[in-house]
Amino acid sequence: MKILFAGIIARYPFGGVTWCSLMYLLGLRALGHDVFYIEDTGECVYDPVLNTRATDPTYGTSYIHRSLEPFGLGDRWTFVNYDGSYHGRCADEVRRYCAGADLFIDLSGGSWFWRDEYARIPHKIFIDSDPAFTQLAIAKAEPWYVEFFRRFDRLFTFGSNIGTPASPIPTGAFTWHKTWQPVTLDDWRTDEPPGDHFTTVMTWQIESFTDVGGNKDQEFVRFIDLPARTAQPFELAVNGPQQLLRDHGWKTVDAMSISRSLWDYRDFIHRSKAELGVAKHTYVATRSGWFSDRTECYLVSGRPALVQDTGWTAHLPHGNGLLAFSTPDEALAAIDRINGDYARHARAAGEIAHEHFDARRVLPKLLEIACS
Image (cartoon, rainbow, N blue to C red; front, side, top):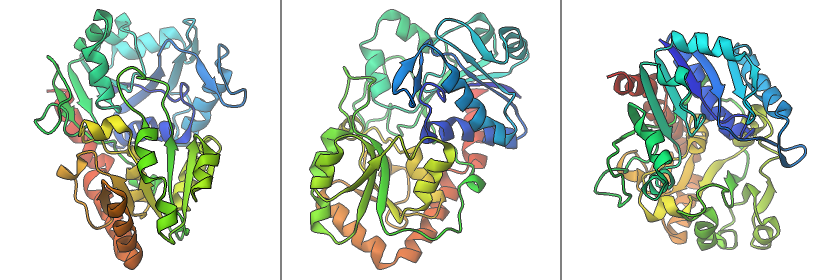
């Protein structure tokens, strides 16, 4: 198939976000499909050098090229700036590609437009990486926003409980199919020995969906005293109140500094002993079943993951390699379990990643539903 894939690499030019789109592109290509990346959000890029939203898209377009070119995709992308100008491949080339495309995949709002060339593609799907937030926004949205989602043939979400009795999140007339972020295993496996710290990469507060849900800060304060209760050291890559966190015993680094490229982000995870992941409040409160793409990358790297339960425990194995917690006491007990038999948990982490998140398993299921 020919697949037009929309993502947000330039909108959020950081390693974790980039890997999300890249692993779809690489996974689909490995299955024999022809892929083309487009970004058409109508928004300005973020320029981390200037620390501002920039009307000049140069940083974002250069970043897209630097990220895709090492994988042989350096000429397979287009960025549409907020002013309608095309960068990378030109508008005519995009239209020609779309004319022969079989599937349009929109990940996380990589396009907020229904240009004629997108609308004419036979199969169109949206993949929601912000479960609960997306559905709550639709429930209170203006008609144009609801209509945007109606034009997709299928809707997918990383929230494994969305649309089930396990979660109260409203879905209205929409059906959301469960999926996971696909991981290209060979890009993450490593022989590098683990470090000493339990780590994570986190955003203290998000700038979107501020009117429909709560952020990670609301949950993290429940666990802020963990360093005082264990000898296990922690390191947070965080864009948040670093001094506050340090005062409570957390080692911190700036999240943007370790996310400037695909490789910096991956190296940070590879240097970790395990992940300690706290979820956004809305994911937890709604029992959405959200599971992090970042956690998947820890697991495939052979790093155990200890992450807050959002309801995902009903859908994934846990207890070895991947452990869940809801309270500080549960987190402390799980830390001791990981440290008590680290080699076993590290092996189990990789096995879970292979069984549940391998792009060669995830993507065929998604394509089957998308094109049915």
